[in-house]
Length: 188
Image 1 (cartoon, rainbow, N blue to C red):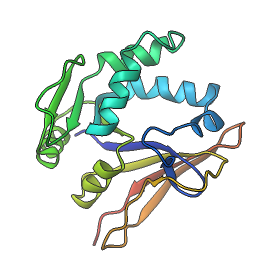
Image 2 (tube, one colour; image 1 turned 180 degrees about the vertical axis):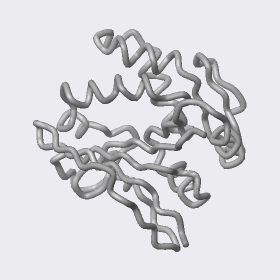
Image 3 (cartoon, rainbow, N blue to C red; image 1 turned 180 degrees about the horizontal axis):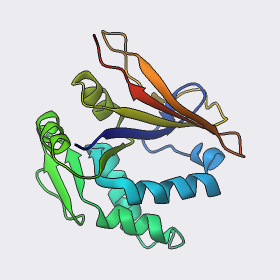
Image 4 (tube, helix red, strand yellow; image 1 turned 90 degrees about the horizontal axis):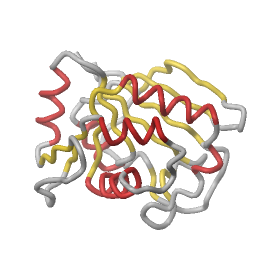
C-alpha cells in the first residue's frame, strides 16, 4: 500500500508562496546541496506525483522548458514519473505521463490501495486540505525557510477540526532551513 506524502517549502510565518501566484523567491533562502539531494531522493521514492491545477500549470511550464538544464536528474524524474492532476476545469494534458481527474479523493483512494511506491503531493495547498480532510494524507514534510515575507498564501487552510501530527524527524540544514517530517495522526 502506497503512502501519501505532502511536500512543500514555506516561510517561518507559514506561507508557501508570496502575495502573487508563483511568488517563490524565498525558495532561494532554502535551496542548496541538501535540498537538491532530497529532491533527487524524492524522484527515486515516488511512484506518482500529484498536483492541483494551478501547481500543475506552473510545474509543467517550468519542467518542460529548456531553462535550468543543470537540474538534470530532477528534471528527468519530474518529466518521466506518472503525474495526477486534480482539476474540474482541465480534461487532459500534453505533459508526459499525466492524468487529469475531477474526483481526486476517489482516485487517490484507489491508487493508495494499490501496491507500489509512495504518492507525493507537491505544492497545492487547496488540494492538500482536501486530502487531509478526506483522511488520505499519511505524512507531511515541510522545509521551513529561515525567512519571513510579510504576506502570502498559507500552506495550511483554516478547517473545522483540530488535526494532530506525530514528529518523525526534524532535520536542520546548513543554511538554516529546517525540514519537519510528520506522520498524520488519525482521529480516534
